[in-house]
Image (cartoon, helix red, strand yellow):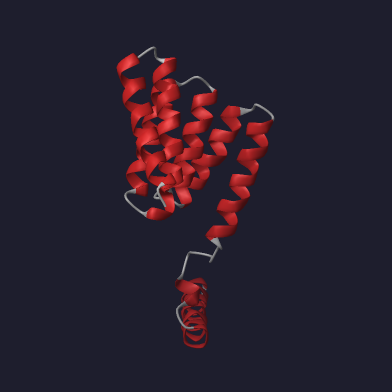
Length: 152
């Protein structure tokens, strides 16, 4: 008798599942909830800015890293993370993050000012590491890019 009840219950569950699939399409099968990623990133950037202003640089970096998990190809997020690491005097990491931001920005004209700011971060990081060659090269790159802006 107990086996009959279990079979009957399994049959009812399968039938309900089929009915749900027919009426709801494959929505029930989707494990993801649609999230407006722009709003999530905007919120995390706002949090990061507030932490940065309070000199809680590690918290700012954590917010930016969460934003990067959402949008890992965003050069602005990488730049801001570089700035947080620069404030922590983590020179090498700051320079690497700014270089990553520049790589993602590519030659896109929209990011020309961002690339200049990244070269300034790299310059400051090189100064922090007492690397005069690196400092000179980064400063020259920032100045060269800035000159192209003023020619418009």
